[in-house]
Length: 518
Image (cartoon, rainbow, N blue to C red; front, side, top):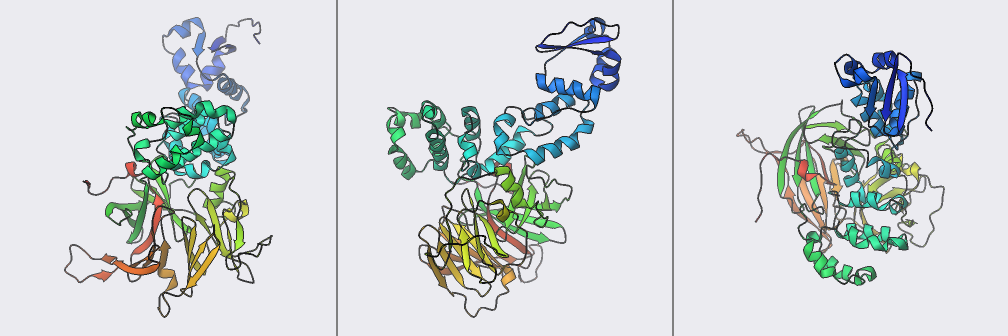
């Protein structure tokens, strides 16, 4: 509401969009360097005592409140714009720490509809590149929430056009269907969202399946639509890789990236940098690589070639608890059971000191042993926040998940396969009699679209496959550590610290040499 104001000699009139303010020129110039510089120069504003601004109205109102009172109201709806405005006015220095604290403590995927329109490539508090990076990496989790289903069209479309980390383009199509099915009125947006699918990278089998969808059948020009949308650029479904991490000296790590057939390209050496932020929402060119069944991890900066160990020991602030807070919820139907007794109902409350939290194609599952009775149990998926407050400690088993099957290697070298859809349990002893150090073993696999589980012995460098199709273990590779510039005979690798599967922003990674494929 406009108010009459009698101009004083010291008054400065500030017009910001549809609102007018009359402030003390002396106060505003002594408090805000932007205005001080404006009025010490021979500018038109300095002669007319009038300034026109173009900030978000709530933002500028809060800034004036802060200048005059030392406090202000802030909301996620305009937190990015507020900080960018204070940066423009050159009064942001004292705000960085409290704003970062506020943002990291409160930001979840619920806020994406209001945060996405605020960020730009040069936003100071959070750039669009940083936000895009976290959305791309966690899209499969985001898409499996009720929050995603309630996003407005603009938010969904913005997300689906990113270089999302998925195992197949069909997962993009599935997320569109879920969003459209949530509200019948959304069917009119179905063709528009289909343009977000990169059809040239869609598997032919998936295309056939899609053509049988009832909504697709209502489209008279679907085949033509696919043909006209084949120039899709980057293949989003080709971002899952194996990574090996080797220690070089005390603080240097060497990374190698391997494709599904273990063709390798070396990325180089990375220097430890403990000044890297460990906040869950991190930099644009960084990645988190978890290993040892998700119990350890490092944060990598691909541009600066630095890394930092991720903290798994901070009570109530573990890596996974921060992830759970960011995602907020998942809507998967819960399937919990004892592994060896599929008819017995899992009793709650459930206590366990020996369990693993595993990522599995857009969800997290828990595999563990009950406290006292040591009965195998699983939650597919796990939803309660308490299971995400996971702290690193000694375990009596290692585990990995491929499609619907959990593969477990116990300390006694028993090999367990459990299908959580059919609840079939199979235990064998393929390594009976082996005198292996359990702590030197790595069990890993891709989460889907593969037919092998990998077992690596860090002390010997031997790599074994469990071939799912043939249902047997095959000794196939050995990792050797040989000094290229030395005539010494090879030394079996004792520097390998991790071998794992993960999503990687492959466009950000510069290998030591280039490869071309024909």
